[in-house]
Length: 191
Image (cartoon, rainbow, N blue to C red):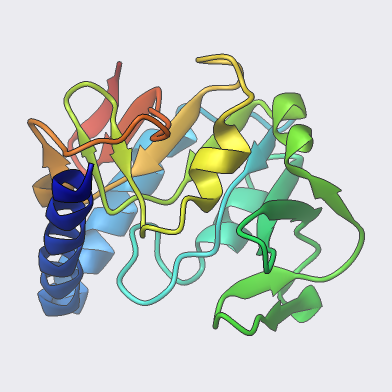
């Protein structure tokens, strides 16, 4: 297991560096393509759990307002001190604040992660996804814990990744939660 953790940390460091080196033009082109693919999955009546992309994360800085314009309800995570996530409804940029972890998080009533079962789609952050649907996050296990009780595919869990982050195989651990699809500029790959 230690070798898997080491391998994950080394891979994360390389992927973070690659994201930092991505030109704004490439990021913008990727964002436009990913949104086009996601748009075909969205309906006005949907509830979607998502996250607020930071820096060069896939989706772009205005991803959540864009998403809200296409669905009925967007739930965003709030990071707990004990490594758990709660979720609150996105009610506009003015109702967001910066958390102690530097994340954009919603203010207002929150729900424990069991609310994910009521969603039509979950968009989980990822550093990489492999051809078997294994997802590698940032290493805190927040999403693995939040998604763990959900049956596979109910609701579907998608991860947005750059093409260079869609890999043949990732190092995994028993607690890692798979995703149902990877969204890249090329399209949506379902597992």
